[in-house]
Length: 70
Image (cartoon, rainbow, N blue to C red; front, side, top):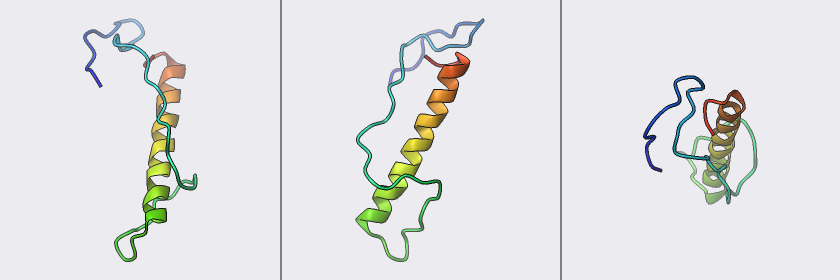
């Protein structure tokens, strides 16, 4: 992702454009990350990526709602 060239001093919005939500994640949505060190499985790893991706999308949505990120 390219870095911002300028930041609007009024809204603090980045100038490089829209941030698209993360897509293509598999796994079960949730709020907890599973410890995969004892018994790593593809399902546990997929679920962890899904949880992290969902949280990133929620953070982006909040920042967009505040006008800080477009």
